[in-house]
Every structure is written in C-alpha cells, then in structure tokens.
Image (cartoon, rainbow over all chains, first blue to last red; front, top):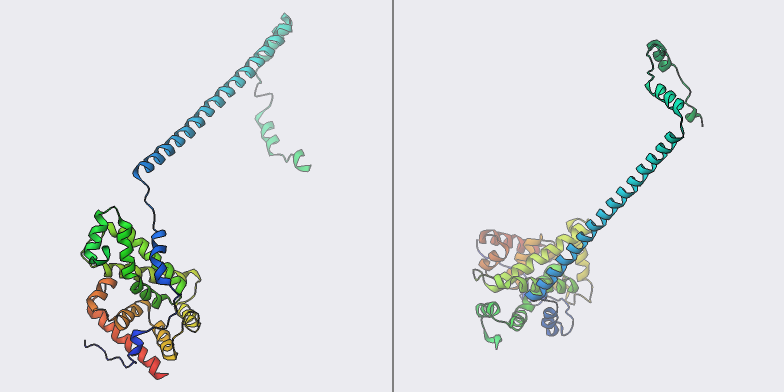
Length: 137
Length: 183
C-alpha cells in the first residue's frame, strides 16, 4: 500500500499547540529519580523477616498458653462443683434413719406399671387440645 | 560521562554498575521529551501526562535490569508509555461509566482551554479530529504523522503487523482530512 498523501499544512507536523509549564523538562529528571522505588538492603530485609516471624510465634505461644490456663480453670470449677454436690448427698443420707432409708429404697424400686396409665388414656391425653399457659401471657 | 554512550551501552552499564541512578538519569534526559509528547497527544491534559510519564519511567527502572536487547530501548520505552496511556484512558471510561465518545468530548473541551492548548484554530481542529479516532488508530496516526516513525518500529510498539498499520494510517488520514477540510 502506498503512503497516503496528506493534504494538511506541513507545519502541523512540527508543532502541536499544547502548553507545557516553564522549565518542566529541566526539573523532570530529578523529580523522576526522587520517585524511584528504593531497594532495601538484603540484610535489612532479613532482619525485618526474622522479627516478623518472632512476633508471630510469640503471638501464637501466648494464645495457646492462655487457652490451657482457661481449661485448667474450668476443670477446677467443675471438680469443686461435683464434690460440693457429693457433700450435700452425703449430708442428707447421714440425717436419715433406717426406716427412712428403707422407704426411700422402696420408692426407688417402684416401677410404674403401664396399666396404671393405660395406653388409651395416654393417647386421649395427647390428642386433647391443651391450653398452653405460657402462650396466654 | 554516560551522555556519550549509545542506548545499548547505557543498558549494559545499568546492569553491571553500582551507579544505576546516574545511568538512568541519562536515559530519562534522552527520552523524556519524546515520551512526554507521545503521551500528551493521547491524554491531552498536562497533569495526566506527567503522571503517566513518571509511571513509565518507574516501570522502566524496575524492569531495565531484565531488559533483553531483542528490541531497542526506545521502542521498549514507547511500548510502556503507550500501554500506560491507553490503560489510563480505559480506566477513565470505566471509572465514570461514560461511553467512549463522551471521554473524547471531554478531552476536546480541554483543547479549548487556553491553559492547556495555545495553538491556532487549525491546530485545534487537527487535535480534535484525532480525538475522533479509536485509541489505537490515534497512536498509529500520531507516531506516523508527527514523528514519522518507521512502520517496523510502530509494529514493535503495538504488536500489530505492518500491513495493518498502513491500512490504519490510511483510514486515519482520510477521516481527519474529511473532518478538517470538510469544515
């Protein structure tokens, strides 16, 4: 393809008309060099890396340390609560006489016979509409 | 001392020497005006051109160490600056969700601003006519018309075949002539 003939005044090729601030090009190289990213020394980078790793490890260590303390605390509380309840049970038993103990035993051995609450009674009970006291409030 | 060196020698010195900044300063001084005007004709506003030019040189600084002399330094710099300028224009369009022609209309108004453009009427008409072209075609027209850059070099900058570039320039010229001479 031949080069197209351009029917425009030749002077348009050499100028452009855009305004540039005075001395812009004089100061530009210095401005560009000042904006260049500075390379950190290898030693400094290593130091920063090790320090960062140390901080992360310290953080993880303290967190786990804190968690084990919490677990131990919970165990202590649970053990104390259980032993407290055992103490109460032992106290109550110690106040009962023999006849009370026999009665208590009899009650614990009693089994509710299913005939007492026949199946039909149970089904009837379950099928009735019962007022939900809570919902009325 | 470095001023007298060719581009190849400058790049070689940059790669091996501890005084990279002095070498790079020479590169900046050598190409600042060409790259600035290339960018300015695309984005029109001086402040934007300055930002893009700075970004161009920052990128050049970062990647010059790995630069291979398969292409010439100036085509490599032009490639970076072209990509930066076109990316800027694309971001401007998507940022404000305005269609293509509205951004160009906005830039045409800048040409009417005497603080940005002091050329005469026909110069203003030419710049506005160029703004009517698609971005890549503007690049082709500017490099060929204003800088008389060989098609082979433009091809390296844009990654487009020489044949396609010739066709693009041909169409661009016709559109611009129609706009200016028709008005």
